[in-house]
Length: 169
Image (cartoon, rainbow, N blue to C red; front, top):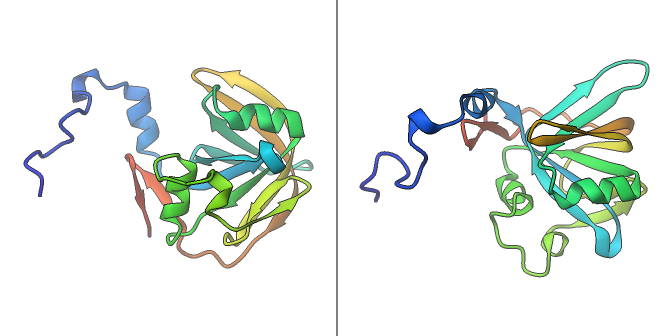
């Protein structure tokens, strides 16, 4: 039961950043980006992603500049992007660091090491990228990767992020 119509500590509407509100209105697939190996493995839930088709296909993810993922990708030279389905909300929460993961992020999920970084074995749609560049832009960093390999399923019910929460079709 809740006596409030909105979150009691939410920023009042008139003080919210309109650009952030715009971004929240663009429905986006939820992904987990991973990189590293052994003790350097890290991952992060990412909804700001773009795929650029062309002779050299690219995958671009936008993350905060202080994310461990940035330095791990720059150090390893590669990363993996996992496209989540509607049944993988807990996985998204784990890598968004809002769900406890005793022993670390990878202690609670099955994964296999690849040349590009850890691959979450329960995720069917996966993109393997070599790092091309990291570009600071605004309050985020764009990580650009060349798509070197893909694993695709018949995904019909992706996990979507819209206006601050997960949605499905």
